[in-house]
Image (cartoon, rainbow, N blue to C red; front, top):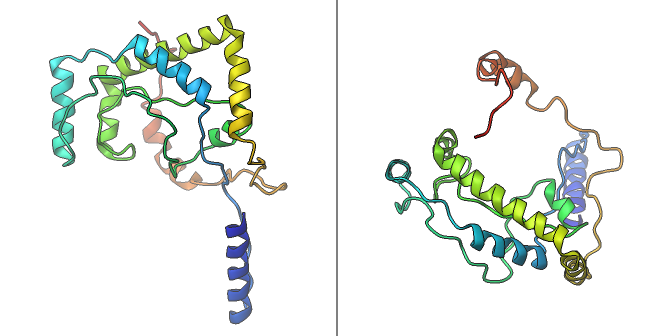
Length: 213
């Protein structure tokens, strides 16, 4: 918040020098996502139990073609589960789950439902989502999540351990919402763009309820 306050002073100074006015509008303010050690170890154990999906030759070939097309390292799909090596380096990416992670113990994990080495926001990252690669990865991730939750229900001591480790991990940090008290959601954000393409998007809406097999 100190940096934000400094930025407002810079804006105020610029306004005084140019004899103009300025307004401050906060559209988003979220905390970085943090993971709880106890829950991370639990999820890791279940991930090792479930294992990585078995990929077909066609799926592997598609992944390598995409990697070649976007000029990244070509090594195909993930074949094994990554081993947790300790506290991870904080990533700059944030979302509203970050605020939750500073209030209660939380674990975040990634399952192999896309092609490695490709940026999440690149066009190529959308290709695998319509294939069996995404389905297999999501199925594996669902098994890990379900098994982790089941183990928590079966073993109440895990909850106690998570609460204790969470208290220790966050003892030097006092969480507070960085949104102003009078903040209103920016409902008009991207409204013009959405309306422009809504007719084209509507043809891709699911007509009935999805059926999972």
